[in-house]
Amino acid sequence: MFEQTFKNIDDILHKDAGCGSELDYVEQTSWVLFLKYLDDLEKDKATAAELSGKTYTNIIAPEFQWSVWATPKNNEGKLDHHIALIGDDLKDFVDLKLFPYLKKFKADAESADTIEYKIGEIFSELKNRIQSGYNLREVINRIDELRFRTHAEKHEMSHLYEDKIKNMGNAGRNGGEYYTPRPLIKTIVKVVAPEIGQKIYDGAVGSAGFLVEAFDYLKHSKTLTTSDVETLQKKTFYGKEIKSLAYIIGIMNMILHGIEAPNIVHTNTLAENIADIQEKDRYDIVLANPPFGAKVRAEVQQNFPIKTGETASLFLQHFIKIMKAGGKAGVIIKNTFLSNTDNASVSLRKLLLENCNLHTVLDLPGGTFTTAGVKTVVLFFEKGSSTKKVWFYQLNLDRNLGKGNPLNEKDLAEFVELQKTKAESENSWSIDANDIDQKTFDLSVKNPNKKEEVALRQPQEILEEMKSLDEESTDILNSILELI
Image (cartoon, rainbow, N blue to C red; front, side, top):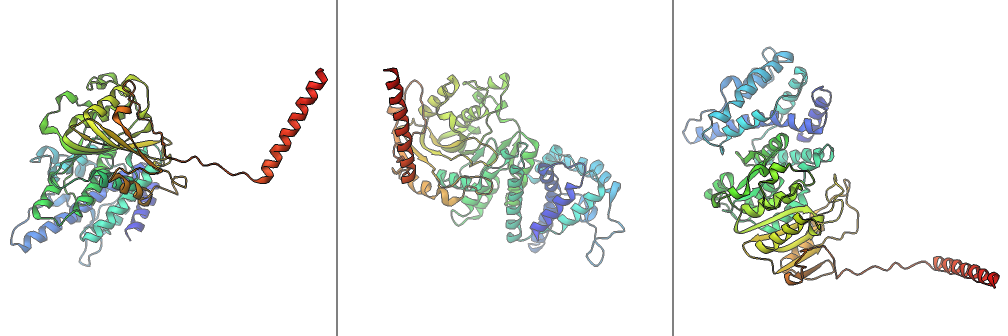
């Protein structure tokens, strides 16, 4: 049912003049979905309070509650068409009353880690793009069919939302920045192996895929105590995101996965001078796929000791600085970072090798990221001691990756297993830090164990080549004879 509802909503938005792409569909679905989720959350909290003999005070004022403005019901539990807003009346209410009311929550909230603050922040960052009040009414009616009350419902909803993010990633227009393949994220989380009590950070949070998968990993890592649940909800997951749409999607994704008030801040991570980072600002775990390729302005580069216009290289400096001593990281980066000869790349590799233990490099095949033709690697490192040995694993698959043939967890199973002992194989090898060129710090992926496959040719092909060589020899011989 959920899947069909989402498809119907996309069909409605496709007809609306204000929504031009999959990105708009996700954004507009998100804010309506969020308000329906909030309504169900308040009902659950009111029921829980009643059962324990307490009184629950609603976050949202009566006239702005979902059941009042969005879906007023008659005695039969069906939409009351006599009082339900529609057309321009509905659009005007949403644009001129609802959004301004919800924006104010940010200023009135007690702190940034409350659901009230997130409500205010979300509705400060976006606007209603659905131009037709009739289309908006249809979207609201569809979303009202959805339920977020049981664990199974929330689980199904979160998976469908992930699918929407994935589709948005495939839709182009930079959508790929929102989606890192989930099998890869799960593998990175598994190798980094965070523990409850550690603070996990993604400074380029996007759709919050890393934080969501880390939450899922920790939820199943042990039997959770009440204290563990509280820690996971409020003191574990932290992120920063510069783009409004990604910020909204990241928060919504985390909420749907069960984190009520995500600690995601809408800010430009690179605008922060890393010299100002103090011990209290640091994290135990960094998981990230920072954007790459964008040219960063000179004034932003001043925030970093190694100045470069490459976004990912600035993020890597930020991550190294913001990690606690003993902290662990799994970071995706373009594979050219390992061998680029420019001064910034050389200096950054030197910094990484001398300040961290770069213990593992996972070399991924082309097509891992279906919307970009670049090759990437994953750097796994720990802060606090220099690198002694780097273990490389080259993921060699017997098929080409693409939209219809994506990376899966089975593809990465051997890597996960061999990484535990840093074993050598046809796909893996180690290099000693002393053998790394101390001028270039080149870390190029050169697999010494991969056997070169010699293609056996067909007999007919060999005979034809022999015949061709004979004819060529005869021609040369005749030319020589003519000269004599």
